[in-house]
Length: 332
Image (cartoon, rainbow, N blue to C red; front, side):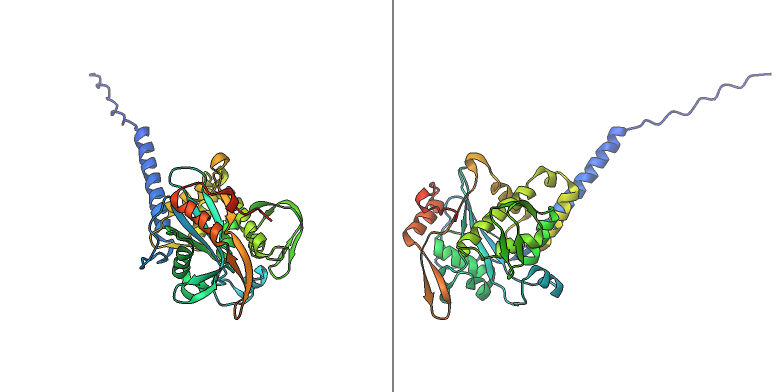
């Protein structure tokens, strides 16, 4: 009996693990890119920077206008009660800072502009600086700051009460060292002395409170300390290398922050890391030089800038020269 020829096994299909890995990598990159552009596209934007006759020309470096507005928009009655914000339906600039990033390296400068600064508001005469926002939003505030400082603003970022709370909570709170106890029932603040982690509600109360011996002069220092602590968290490897921390932060920031129509997510990231420099290039912080206070009928107490020192400060930023130490304010 003839033997059947042996069956030849079918050829084995070649496996391509590298190809599968490549497909996964490509898909991951597409997801990241789509997420990036999606978040950038969904940023809240307003036309804050507009051209006008007499607008300052471009100087050296880049200038950011940072606005903390006291809007209660989006807060429930329960949240207003919890955060001690009151029911004010208006919207003013509770915090105004100017951040200058030099063109040729060197330390950036962060300048607090006091809310009660007595300045000319285009089309509205002399008034307190924070009135500009309530009269014409971020566009009028940006123009007012440009005219008062002679600096051209390149970027604008603003955040409200609810947004600040959300961002702080998204990064797990901020670490601050409080030298003395701080109690302010109006702001909902009750902090013991010592180094501690502040949650969103405590952070908001901390930057709002004026229940200190030097009121606004100390408040703006607290605001700069808080901003530094927040950026310390945001730019830490624990956050930006951990998707479980980074994604919630970006989602909350997207909802909480408003930027100029020409700004993008990359601009915000660049600003955050620039403000977190250390060593010789660490940020120089100061308050706009003031000379005196006065009482103006209908406005109450206002703050006058020191014209000579203020001009020296803003001219140094505009021309790229080092800020003279004589114009920098000591912390109270």
